[in-house]
Length: 94
Image (cartoon, rainbow, N blue to C red):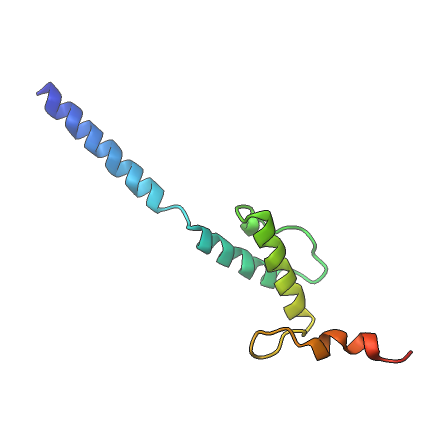
């Protein structure tokens, strides 16, 4: 009886641990949430969104730069950086 109770308790704990782990977001989900938070933040807001808390620093920097390029219209319809748009202001005469 004691072995059965111990085995049942262990099985319940393992099941609870598996359910608890499955409810955590994957890294890809965290990155997707961060990307959306960067898109949704107010103009001029420089603070790191709370949704980006779990994103690695290098990945956050890449996401931030991607959003800056997109916000400034420097990305074409294919998602590539449009160098003509990017350099437009630097070639204009005052």
